[in-house]
Image 1 (cartoon, rainbow, N blue to C red):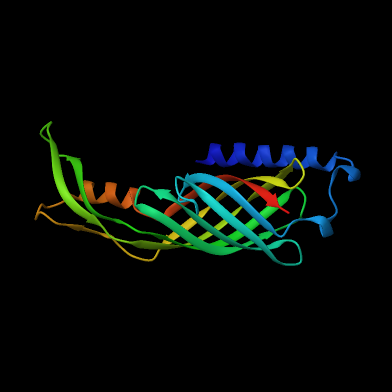
Image 2 (cartoon, one colour):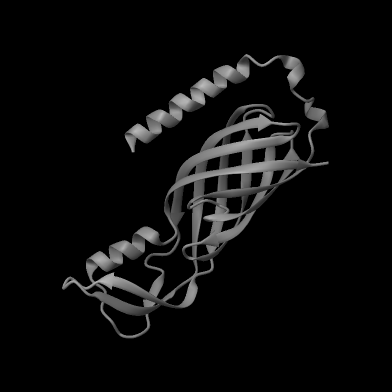
Length: 198
């Protein structure tokens, strides 16, 4: 994890230096920036889920956005709303908070290791679960009004053990740890592209 954070920091620093070398004329004027952006995104505990779409709308001062996401996750359909603040309308750091909800899955058969070499199938309900997300990242502009974003953060789960065993099976502590790992919450690693709409 420390190596990943170090590499991420080096990449951010290198691209920031490159951005500073860009000539002033290669940027658009902030007054010309579109207010509405649509995008695609992916990641772990991402506001767009494992794969999804996003919408961003400038609400103040060209750098504060209302943000929404919709996508697929390992825990059902992911929806989210939040606020994003960009350090600059050019290249720069970005900070965000989101409230995300995963719909859950009403009926699913999951296989766990029984310990004797054969899988143990358990019928379960993955309940809906929400998280409060805090994240920070970096934006790069490209083209006319488009951006590439990478963010890291943490999703605080608002519900403990959001699952129910439907067939009466007993889950081991290891099985519960696996479910806790794949349930919403934990480290956020996300990336996305947004495209300005005039």
